[in-house]
Image (cartoon, rainbow, N blue to C red; front, side, top):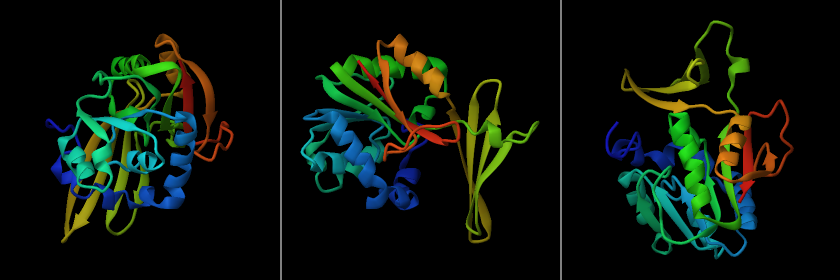
Length: 242
């Protein structure tokens, strides 16, 4: 890991291409619709703004958007895009970096809460979100439900993707709620591996973090279309209110 975390120039250069499915209007439209409704007149603050996948279309709705991003390389990609001039990006750790102003919405999507690899850092993130919110403001997280039920007893590894060009393998440490995601790409007859550490977190644990930060759960859905959250849901969109 370097100053840009695990999202240095090598990752930033191909990030939009590698995550192309998540940029599709059919996928992204529901995300922006829900966030825009929660933001109202705004403004909104994105933790881990990245290359602007969500922030740019949200700003196009007329909502003032700011962001915090650890990776200078990712933020540089954002600044190169049309409409980026309207978005104020602060370089720093979103769990603790403060920006000026108060916001009706703070949001953290695409499993990014898991990039904080300790419980303490995740708790700090909730407190930082609450500190940026107006009274009645909302904090939104999109994150996977830990897939331990799909992990055979005694096993630590789970294949989640495999084709001729790339394998994806998650390595679990149940004792510490640690997860290392291994991405193996096969290029010109050789394998290239990128491994990133995460900390998985349960919905009930997030609710307790919210309570510690002075927030209360308002809604929880399975997806951005507001499908009800059930015991079979594999991810959740949770909304806490100050």
